[in-house]
Amino acid sequence: MTARLDHVSKDFRLGDETITAVDDISMHVRAGEFACLYGASGSGKTTLLHILAGIEQADSGTVEVAGVSLSGESERTRADVRLRHVGVIFQSNNLLPEFSARENVALPLMVRGRGRDESMTEASAALEAVGLTGLDDRFPAHMSGGQRQRVGIARALAGKQQVLIADEPTGALDSDTSKHLFTLMRDLSDAHGVTIILATHDPLARDFADVVHHIVDGRLSP
Image 1 (cartoon, rainbow, N blue to C red):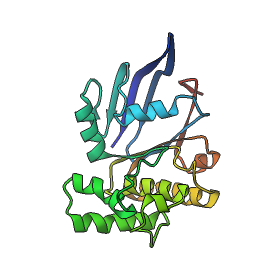
Image 2 (cartoon, helix red, strand yellow; image 1 turned 180 degrees about the horizontal axis):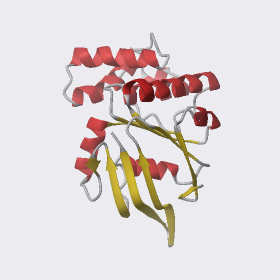
Image 3 (cartoon, helix red, strand yellow; image 1 turned 90 degrees about the vertical axis):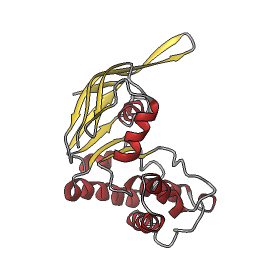
Image 4 (cartoon, rainbow, N blue to C red; image 1 turned 60 degrees about the vertical axis):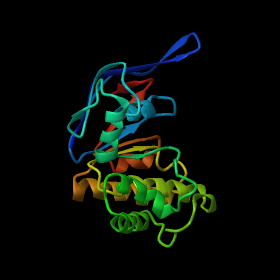
């Protein structure tokens, strides 16, 4: 499945000032492609990913993800597209503290209609894939920051979504774990046809991506 942006812009108000976070960006990510959005903090990467994930609405332009137009759609419709077609890895892991690692990963699967046993089995496999074997029943409060981030990654990987959107997923990870994650994403793209859109300032990501889009001040830079 593809992701397409055509002349997309997004502004935010900060007091009396208007901040342009995304400035007339057009971009097409082909099905099964591993695309890297590379740029410094504050360059607009996160806002662009939020638009692709349907978390934010663009002020202008058109957005299509996994064959579905998000332009002008309600928050509920955009959330449904995200639930069923798009796995999102956030900068903050957004884990539910009252649930174990495995339950945090399994919950979105159950919301999509999977049975509990099937969801828990798939959650364990996803946790193993990100190097958290044996931590299925551990709660977020008893994990390190890096471990919590990997649970968030496992949650996005579980369910075999068509599109995977990742916002600085290696920010809390060491270099070896970061390399493992990028290798895993590369395999998802090559072997399973998952479309991956990764925002990062980690230079290691450029060695794994099919295409690198440089973002400077909300615009794509050559």
